[in-house]
Amino acid sequence: MKYLIISLYFNDGSCIHPNGITGLEIENGCITLVKWSYKIKKDNIVSVSRELIEGKETIEKFFD
Image (cartoon, rainbow, N blue to C red; front, side, top):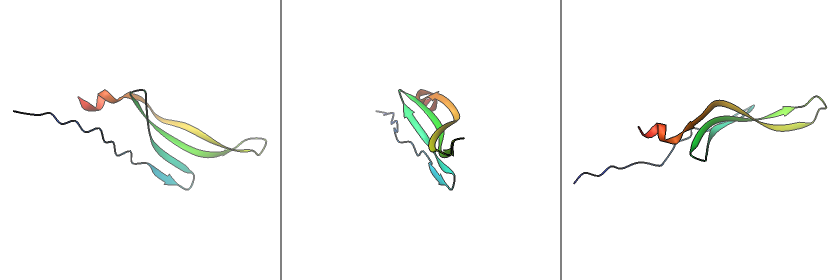
């Protein structure tokens, strides 16, 4: 008897850089590569922003 084993483990390869953090976000069956970083607004207020690096892809795409 043969069995199909599907791994649900993702090595997201997130990384901390001097100017931010990159990582994978998995939500509602989709996976997205994002970067979180500090931004200084025109009024000198520091905020954290999320930048989309690579668009949403369905997770099923990786199991074909």
